[in-house]
Image (cartoon, rainbow, N blue to C red):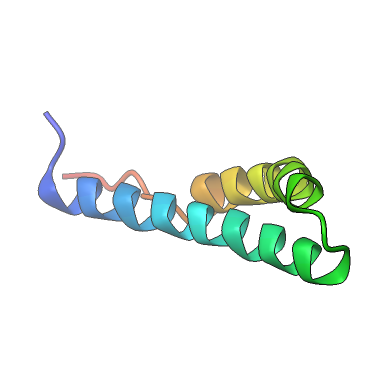
Length: 64
């Protein structure tokens, strides 16, 4: 079972990943006014960066 601290760290990392996706998509839409292009670029760039954040800044396995 997950501890509360681990669950909150996972949730915070996930929220950061979604915020990064939204930010990159919005910046793309602002530069090139095409909503579909903003979504595509947001997912293609933001998802790998967000997953990297999730892995590197996510929860650390601590000894009990």
